[in-house]
Image (cartoon, rainbow, N blue to C red; front, side):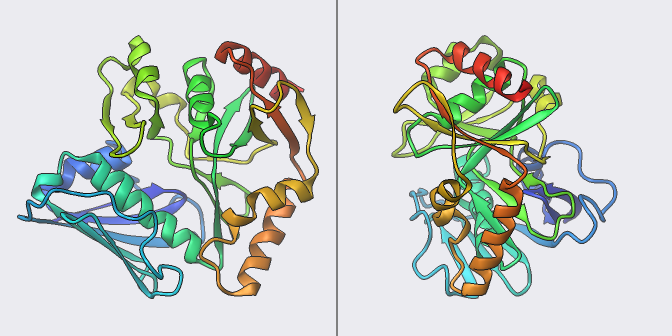
Length: 313
């Protein structure tokens, strides 16, 4: 068994895995582990992630987005029928039993198990919360990007990366309330994109991707050529709410943004004090941002030009 340290959504991760699971660890975290186990920031939580490889050969099936009663249980089991992850809240531990047949299946160990496990840890914590959002940085300024499902948030953030922006995340951004820098943390190593978009980009010819069952998206692992423009944390200066209802850029009030995001930052929090703490922190963060409703044009290059102009303002 090999033990290495990594960062995932702003958590310090102490990862233990056998040799045959090391390729999975590298694909999840990147080739270079954290040398200093005290990173990524003083006071951050350490999550103990362990992998065990089993001989189970059942075909994996899409699990529910969240398992039943996940917001009440002390241990949450994520089960794909072939592999499982047990999230133990008290121990800050994620124990993955990965079927040997799933070792090369990033939908199982990525989307359904590890990514979901860290989302569960965040949403169940009274010192953390998440937003259904991505983030881009351009011109030394960064924006959170949120939208209803299907509007085009993933395409918008990916196109920004294609055009030279830095990608911080594309679907979930996590906030550690005790982080003194006021940052939001993402997982930019992969994106969930329309396969047609992936096929249209020559720089993605050799990129590793896998279709998500029952979804019209694939999980794309960004190739090494994008490595220098993948960043895991940012302190945003703006929040963009993407819409197709119009093609204008309009100011949005902070109360409207809070209501838009309420189901995100309160998810998993049954305690009223925890919900209030998350809302207070988000209000503080939003108070220093430009809050904009960003109407999407049909042309992706036009949207990027308008994004660049917005972040220069």
